[in-house]
Image 1 (cartoon, rainbow, N blue to C red):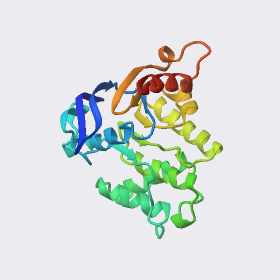
Image 2 (cartoon, helix red, strand yellow):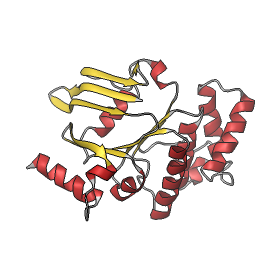
Image 3 (cartoon, one colour):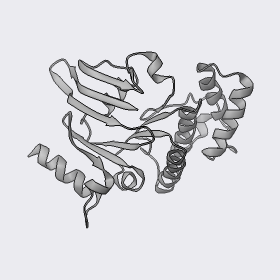
Length: 237
């Protein structure tokens, strides 16, 4: 579903991503991990066409990421996304549906279903200014799911959520994975990643340090946090 081949991204004299290559298979739940400044969000921005690679190629389902056709079946939830405070969640979703040319009838049917999926039916007519962080994230996820994307890209979706919000978000993502959606997740919540992801890659200073299945990367008596610290410390030594 996603391929990166020898991707480098430079900002003037700073190399944010340094010769990175990896694959994400269809139906896989993949997590890209790393400390702040590792290059994770830079990769997401290149996949979403917001930024171009300095060298190398990124493809989504075989289509170069710089072409808008690559994102026809991609849902995206940005880190710290914002809903205009004067819109209700329902109005916000209706505007997203219009961007992909759904008819109003189809849009309403799909939005109502998604609001049930993210447990926001009762709050759908409230203005976004009244939403908690968790409620805003639920609406953002619903927006990312409009049009039934084959690929879902989430950049720190649990940021700012309380433990109950994180648990509920995990349950939603698990149900999507069970439906065959390919999910790419950037996250600092390693305990949650360990529970739900199939494969992880750990980045530091623009490089992929290791990429493997959770089963292979986390050994007996270890946690994903132990593995993460060990690899990042090794990189910084």
